[in-house]
Length: 239
Image (cartoon, rainbow, N blue to C red; front, top):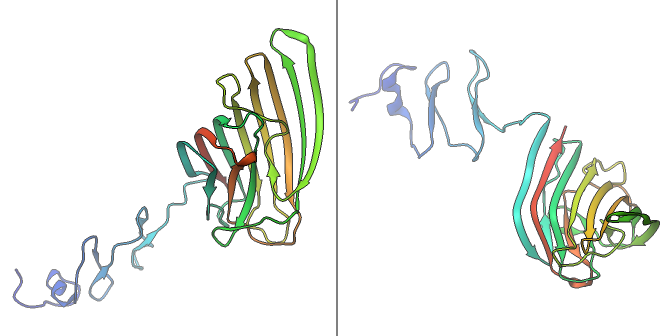
């Protein structure tokens, strides 16, 4: 143990540090030994060159980053608050093995701003197209186009259920959700099975027309207050 402080920039100069805590880092700031307190969890120690002090910095993660994920779940909501930032231009979400406890349920969503403030005015416009074909019977098919103006955006143009034969898979995209100068747009694609006899893909888009604002998250929910079931939900950010 050193008995007294030494010259600036030497090991003995550590005695001049007033206090320490777990996770501290010590470095030479050019004139003395200085203390860098523990940074935010997940940050890395970044050098700024030979003539500057090190800092804690957030990982940029490259052009595509996994922002949030949930392996599985069930309930009346899937809530992703404060997941949209200015770091990324658009976001893609994937969701597998989606089912509803209601035989006539369908997933829908609302944007959030400033944390969990939900945007629920009747300003969501949804336009969808769907087509289906009976398994093994190419002559038994259909197509339909639907449009809605509601207080939520739809992620499906038809109903789904809870039986093992009625499972859906989704991809959906949010474009520039934090850009307050444009109305937020979401696009979805869906592939589902109906009672093991029909395959029914669909696609659609949603726009929220209620003035410019910055949107920070979203909430997925079921119609008819049904319980939703899902696996492998992942949200990616793209620069």
